[in-house]
Image 1: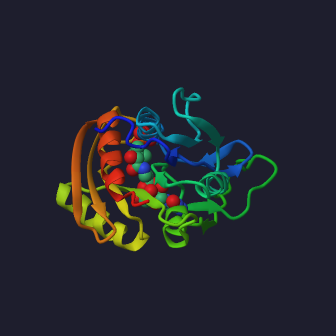
Image 2: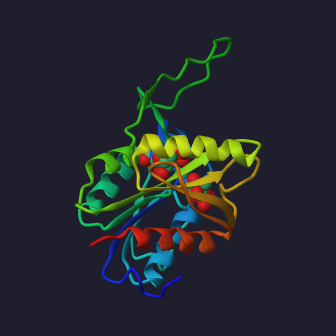
Length: 226
Ligand code: PMT
């Protein structure tokens, strides 16, 4: 790692898992703890960056992450990330974003009715925040980084899916991590392959989420042109 090689840079990191309301007390969510995103934000602060961390449903407000913005839903995450991204040199989307949300959210709690089958929950697709950022480039020269959470038995499977996702999303770098079976979500360690927008392998890293964060920033720094 290069000390203070992000000095004078503005970066935005998203972390945690978004929640989509089903009714006033229930939601669709995921088990992202936010640890990987928090580690990225802290590492960027240590390297001298001006950091905004947008955290979705973190267990507690993290320290040492720069400016912290707390959000719940994908719509809120999108607004907060896009507003901070206007001024940013780098955006890293480490948050686990819900791909779908319920179409109708009743004001009252959904009731169980004896003898009746449950009503199906109709879903609509959420905007793809990463793809929007990669397409629009809210600031010229901005480096856009995504993650790809892929399930798969062989590491080869995970990488194949991750490379395809990298080509689809248009980001400069995609950090591919194997998930499922107790991997990555909520753990202290991660095992990643970083690929570029063409799906070519740039770097691999395995160890603490702090170590992975520094390897991601190393790869980002090489892409900062202005
Ligand atoms: O939080 P931890 O417990 O530390 O776990 C870390 C992690 C496993 C959550 C993290 O390393 C990770 O992989 N984050 C991305 C999870 C995810 O949503 O992956 P995805 O493959 O579904 O999405 C691909 C990329 O598109 C991600 O950068 C995601 O932020 C982004 N996305 C997805 C859907 C959507 N509607 N908008 C998005 O921007």
